[in-house]
Length: 390
Image 1 (cartoon, rainbow, N blue to C red):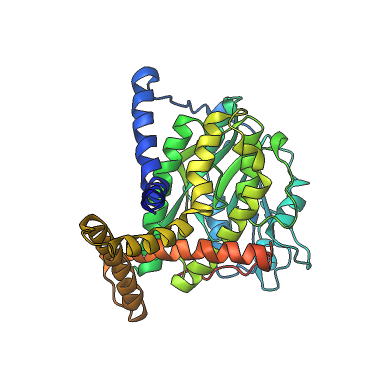
Image 2 (spheres, helix red, strand yellow):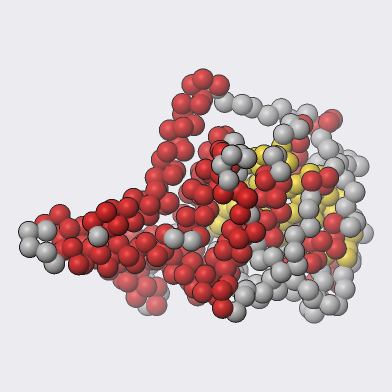
């Protein structure tokens, strides 16, 4: 029991903090010997690019999204804009149709985002394609910052940065999500510097058009799978923090939980479909990054939290087990803080110190719920979008 307890705690710590610490020191050593690689920004030799936006019933956001899109900088004649609105039953297609600069694809049938993306790709003939969501807003030079990386033939995809907007009065969903993505951004930056980012987020990512592979229509995490298939084939996914997509946080913790459960179900699906990445003989660094950054978080870690707590209780009951009693006290205190965060959230009281333990527990509960959902009802690739703060 003692061995299992400490192994469980070590894996949990490694998953959420230890990997980041290890990665940071590896990068520091690498910089000593190789320095920091910089990427030139040659505007004359940027590849042709298509920006693809899949929008479903986004009439509340779409005008702002279009305005943001039309302000993006890119060399004249090298950028195409393509919006696809399959299944939208509100005024989204009609609003987009008012802008002749944008190619609109629309059909009344709704088959899910990935089906829409595959249909849109039939109309993409540029060197690079950039995907972004309809409810996110890009910085003016985002496309330039992304596409400059394609001058390196080893680069097959580029992941932009996701930023979550929240103010001083943010609730647990906003502050927790914001903190989570700041940490994720740091991990992605170090992953990229070591070798490759482990998957891209759909808010803003890009691939070489020639390397794009359609994924099965039931794919839940289409952005993750599209980018990881490119990495699996020996190309790098680089991280570009100077290209960022900003969106508001989920409306509340319930809406954020809905999103996290879906991601967790999609994570299990992705792990099963990317089994070859468990073989370190093919690409040892990518396998190390993939298992450390994604697999542990999406599979065993939530179960280890439960196991370590239960074993800690048993061991703390033994006579003279002061160390185990202190460890149990620390665990209990952490979960009390998370519970208080839950109570304060219900009462709409903002106590920031409680956001992190509460959000941490919500994330791990979502993984458990996502695993159960995947193996019982099969998460559909067609899903209802999360409500976000205005």
